[in-house]
Amino acid sequence: MVLAALVYGAALYIARFIGSQESGVLEIRNTASGSLYGRWPLDEFGEFAIEFIHSVNQSPVRETFRVKDGRIVLNNLRFYSFGAGIPFDLGEGQTLSRDEDAMIISGFDFSLKEISLIIGADHFLHINNEIINLKELCGKNARVTIQYR
Image (cartoon, rainbow, N blue to C red):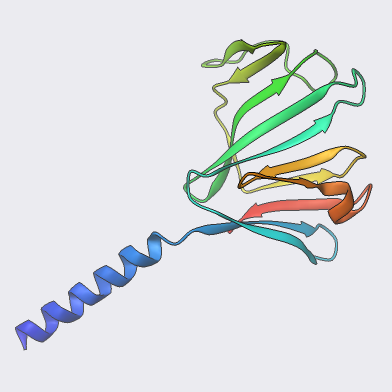
């Protein structure tokens, strides 16, 4: 009886451990209808980026995110020129570095359940060594929600 309980307990522990190691997925859905545009496998602590051309200064901006505790965390912001929506003051714990011509702000301290955005002409998703043109995938001006599940 004790042996059976131990075997059963060990089986539950192993099942939970294996289940917790499964990778999740990053999903992009239409915000209004909930219809699925795409999904990509992404492990806990995995990274993805959203890149776009800034509407005012017309230079690339890349926001890199990682998954932590099932939430989306902004890892860094890479840009070439300041403009509307680009931070010009560093917050506590943030650093500014350079990578060739680009500036990179890192050290952000917030996480998101989801990302909501409107797809412009030049939005790209970088994930798993792929670059996905979000305008081609979702359509220009589509309102989308990006979630990790």
